[in-house]
Length: 296
Image 1 (cartoon, rainbow, N blue to C red):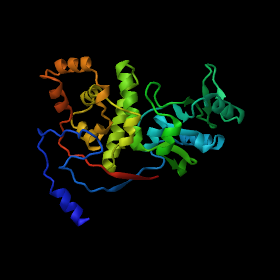
Image 2: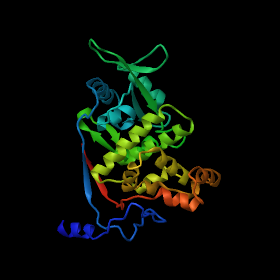
Image 3: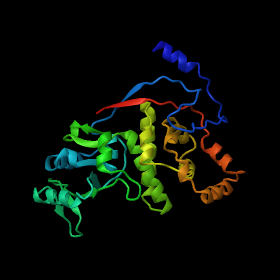
Image 4: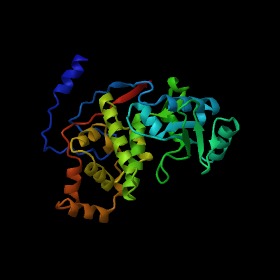
């Protein structure tokens, strides 16, 4: 540990104006970055800010469905992580073509019912019982999300919630980023919630010393204009955290749109796209690749 600290302290801190450009390939670290690798553990509250009502519903889902048939995502998942934000439904990710089968199972066992609007919902017993909608999804995002079979490899089991599977937070960041960007383009009011979720997850990863896995790029590639939109929409000091968790590993130059980039160059009053790219990667922090295990 002492040698590791000495190695890290030998790396000079960049000034606020120094540019840190990601390597051509995310697997190659800049020469100025420490080569040391560390293991980090998420220690999260159980069940975080998830209400007893939602906890009961999630445990009910685990008793009604096979644990490998769904993953808890969405607002209830964010509440479990400790994020304080409102949610009125429980989102679950299921296998492709399995929506009707899962819905039929929940209805047949008596755990859920159909509302007047035809929505699947669960009502908790008790004086303050209220209906909670169960939203069944086959992809985390309609246009560019990930499927159950892929995300299942990057989940952990939460014993405190009946053994339900939830995404590794390191994968939740790109999932939420893509969702947020898609809603920004359509001016969806839920984009505000997605932005808050992204900022929470990024801070969670940074605090744990973790990072976005490089293989996430296969499912969540981001263009230069995507990343510029993100930096422009978050607080100035927050971008350092994005850099620290290696959001740059999602960058795919093949998705760049020259016309959109030229518009952004004019909007930011810069000379050319090269200056736009330099502005994007400006950060006070050096990034490092770390391994992450999770304790739930």
